[in-house]
Length: 191
Image (cartoon, rainbow, N blue to C red; front, side):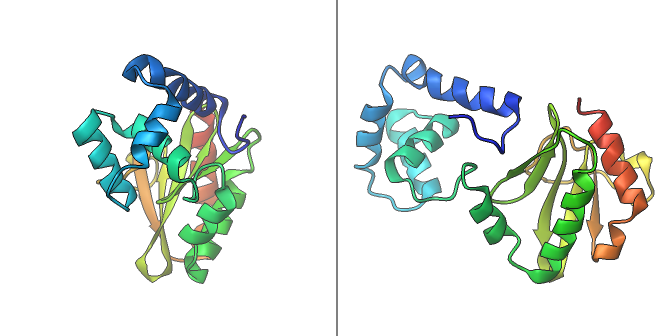
């Protein structure tokens, strides 16, 4: 079933990953689910490690198997839950909301909620935001750091390698016309 919060490219990736499970591992999903249910671990990362160490199942296939075996965990198919959990601080939520409005000004934008950040895509990801302590937000953009003095090169970010610049936003007022122009420039390059 297509997910409305995934770009066609992302949906194609997940469909391909699901379809390749049996081909790549020699076992159907139902067999992997039965194996996963025997795992003595309780946390997602520990279960992934157990599947890899004991069966050679790598992260993407392992995560798919675990979501089928244990469900209940928030996923891309439940964006509202992911957004509520990620943006639970009122100050960062307000900044996120302003970024979301600015990110959607161009047409054909898909917002994808993830556990650690929220991304905006056209054909490919052009922006992402994650909350920081103290009600701040880190905004990543698919532009170069020299596009604005407000930007710097990213360090240790978990979002797309296409996002070549980032900035920390401390208030809704900082989501201004310059940030809107940077989001538009990033969007223009993502199509």
